[in-house]
Image (cartoon, rainbow, N blue to C red; front, side, top):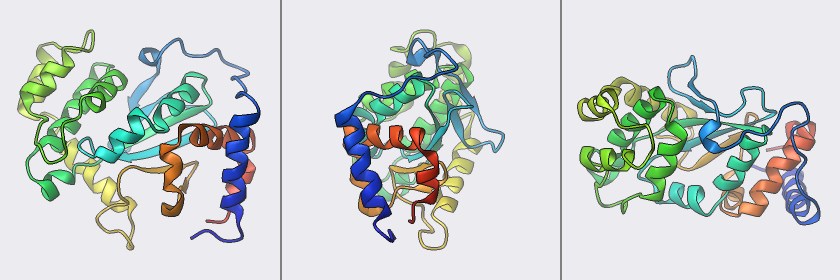
Length: 243
C-alpha cells in the first residue's frame, strides 16, 4: 500500500521526465547494437532468465505467463519496447520468471510447452528473439495454441534457432523440470498474501514491486519509460519511496 504520497510524486516526475527531455545515454559503455546482441543467461538460481548488461543500474524483474493476454499487451504496445530501449542503452536489465498457471486455469498445456521452448531457445542464445516472436503471435487465451508444431513453426522465423537439438527439446519437453521450478518460483513471489502468485504481468524494479493500483504504468509506454529513467537518474529516491 502506498504511504505518504511518495508514489504519486514519483510517477508524476516520471511522466514529466519523458515530456521534458530525452534519456541520458550510458556513460561508460557503448549501446548494444540490437536486441539480438543483448546478453542472455540463466541465473544461478536455475529459474531466472537474465537479459541485458548484468551491471545495469536498473533491474526489472518480470513475471509473465506466455498465454496471458495482458502480458501480450505489455510486450506489444505497453512498456516493454521502452524497456528494450533501456536495455540497449545499458541502463536496465531484465530478469524473467516464467509462469505456466494458465494451463490449469484455462486447460491445455500451451504455457508449459511455451516456457519449455523458451528455455530451449535460451540454450541456443535466441531467447530474446523467440520471446518476442511468441508474444507477437500469441493465440487467444482460451485456445491451447502453443502446440509443438506451432512452436517449431514460429522458431523457424527466428534465424539460427531451428536445429536438431532445439527441435528435440521442444518435442520431448526436455526442460520440464525448469518449467515446474519456474512456476514454483512465481508462486513463491506472491508470498502468504498471494499464494498462487502475484499475477501477470507483475514488475519489480530494484527490489520494489509496482503496486497493483499503479499497474497501469506497465501499459503506458511513455510513463513507464519515464519511471525507468527516473530510477536510473535518482535510484536513491526509488529506494526511499514508501510502498
